[in-house]
Length: 423
Image (cartoon, rainbow, N blue to C red; front, top):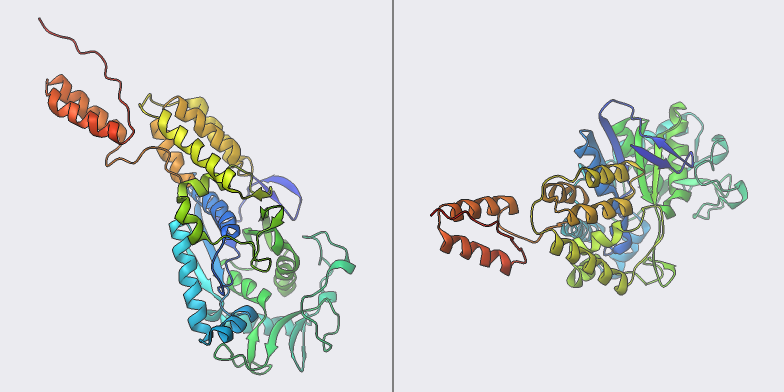
């Protein structure tokens, strides 16, 4: 398989640290609000990647973090007059529900930041110990000047790399926070630097070091996370023992846009997943997402979703008899998936498989893409066909015709071969 890495800016063969094993980490949600279609775009893509790698025989350990301590959670909990934990668990449950409703079920483990405070504090202590972190009266900061490779992932010049946090105690305005001193409600912990809570970036490296070690195979997320988040992760992890690269393949999904603007909660132009599912089922949403390459921007519109619905209905309408394997279509599907997860070409191969009625491939590849390409039925089409053939051969035409009628009602059409009549 070939994958594009944002770090090298090239498509490279997938070579994992251990044979037949893939370590995959994808930045999970900050659970302070409802998940939207922008989240769906990213998580559908990595769900398909994990399922395809497993289909090829790879063992995949896929971890997502859950950011359940953050300024946004603190502020929203105060607004709603509930505890931070109650708010975080509320939106974490909603996130899991929405993911399962979209057929996203490939994640091995969801790791909460709040259950990894010991690992976070340990990592900060080590960074301070080697001089990569320093202590001020407001907290602990990462010394960006201690890491000469900063900026490699984003390609930004030093002048453009600025921290989101303004603090006069920082040695350099570009330095970022590792630990915030202060009282932040119930989500505050004791540490060697005083009571407080972790910064955003440190949770991911503490979690991935625990489960993967200091190097692993694939790190995924949205394009907007490259800077500062992923740059900060690299600086933290690679500073510990100098192992480079921290991750071999950095995969980033393009923006989901609405009327030309990135879908985001800050802009107020987001569409909740749960609302989208009231109009469009999960197969249509996944099909729509996979029609675009994961690195390309994707414009969400009612017209686009309606076209996806029509295309999916067309596949289900023409795949009505089982004509056996169509090798060219199967090869095209696999080649597309191995070529940097080229799902648009994979979907084109699905249409070819449907036109040749390769039912087995449509079922198998549908499981990889998380899309049902055949009409719903209580039994596989080939089994129903076999049963009807046996009934007709034994002249039980009434029962065979009853099955045929029920199949027709479900949108399945059967062309029966002529029976030999013994005279």
